[in-house]
Image (cartoon, rainbow, N blue to C red):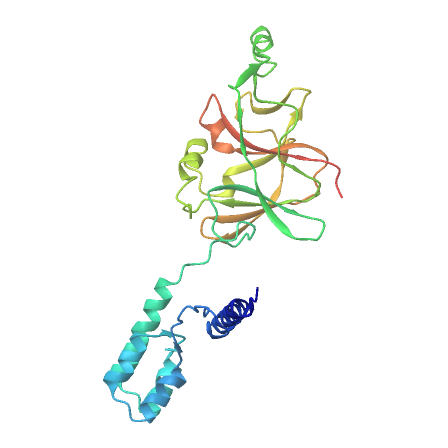
Length: 296
């Protein structure tokens, strides 16, 4: 049987279908990538160009309000704008737009490792890594136990020939904060907290403290499970002279101080003790403790 016509019909149908799909693939446009519209950024020179081109104040001010800007509105810049025949109304619009944009720009977050940046109230130890990069480490307060009187029995038996001595005791033989620097730097911050926290904690530990000069740097008597500090002996209150370490005090700004020991610290346990704690007869409190390991 002859099947020529049927074969031709199928062949023509298949041939007709091929160009249809090919043509569809050729004429389908690619999906354009949508770019976010950006506001033009105006400068003083752009404003001068518009004014010198004869555009009216209303047009120039409308463009200022619709655009981002990098305007210089210093006194010298305003004088140059006036010399370029920019009107008072346009200069006022430039000044207001610049101030509004500056107010809307988020302030840079304070650098927690920059001593010049605001910090929560407290004491911070400056440490450096192997590359020399500085980092501020908070010296956390350690609670000491109630003032413990010693030699009181001997004082009574000897009619005061052996003076009464009182100590504070911090549990643990080592402080958590450590340094290997012989003469470490500390920063005291009494300023208002930039994050809104920390002030209540500082007030709870050291009510009334407002300067690093109200603290004494002392070497603690380290035992296996505790560290001790003599805070009064006889009629004298405060840490003993042989335990105290002299330090230099520098006021960085209002409410901020830099503290540096005058001499190299030997390995051992140390703390900053709020002097008023002993003077006010407090039975307990906190001290800012740290340890010095192998000095380099």
